[in-house]
Length: 344
Image 1 (cartoon, helix red, strand yellow):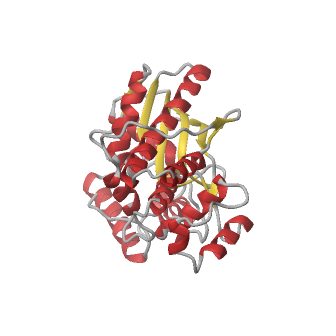
Image 2 (image 1 turned 135 degrees about the vertical axis):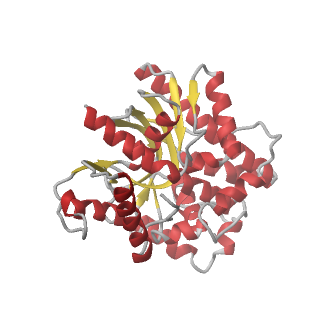
Image 3 (image 1 turned 60 degrees about the vertical axis):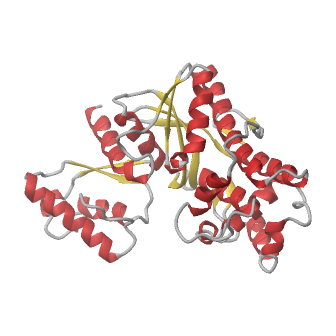
């Protein structure tokens, strides 16, 4: 279809439904299977449910259509597989900002054992609160507060610039996170990058999606080869301590490291953490192919560092080339998953 954008209001939903009606007429198509996201509040998910219930105008022939709910990050990996003509199974690394998880929490730093038809969640970034919910996306300093609280039992060190810049609201936001008030848990890699960006003085508030992470990538010194370390614990699903990377940023800055050097070591640390997790999963699952997808991998510094490190350890790595790695590729992934399950 034409570009519609986020389905967030009546106008975009109307454009969406009119596009469907137009293509149905143009190609004389009567769908038998409809794929949709798992998020119950998405307008597209509600539209799919209304189709099946016969509640959509001019679509009475679709009443009772088969619905296939597809988890957001599985769709990312399926999209990457389709882009490469592969069927899996693979170790799928889906790093992005937000996706509705199978457990009802906000996922976004995921390691999936996946093929086209299904997946298992084999690992993820350790969840942290998002103080204020959606406000934490618009104001990355809130994620810095949450990650610092996770990194330092009893509270972060005194005198941090990010805390000083946001002194008026900092104590309240910390309390909100600790009490779980309007602070949903997230394993999002995007929110981890936001926290690092705010900590390094890149940006406390954003004007468009992904701005803090984009500017963090631009800050990073491309010549720096150092990498922060982070712990991986537990049986599957493995938990990756993203807060270890945040603690390392704090300690490096305190030791006099330049922000650009710390930003590069953070990126390299994420690449190393991804690789370490994939190595553990290869030992356990015997899989040697890794698929990288999700909007975080639009970050070329991270993508190149991750691919190089994985290939150095003998992995076959597949990435997007024809289809966007961000949510622009989600609908393809949903369709591929629905088709695979229909064949099964």
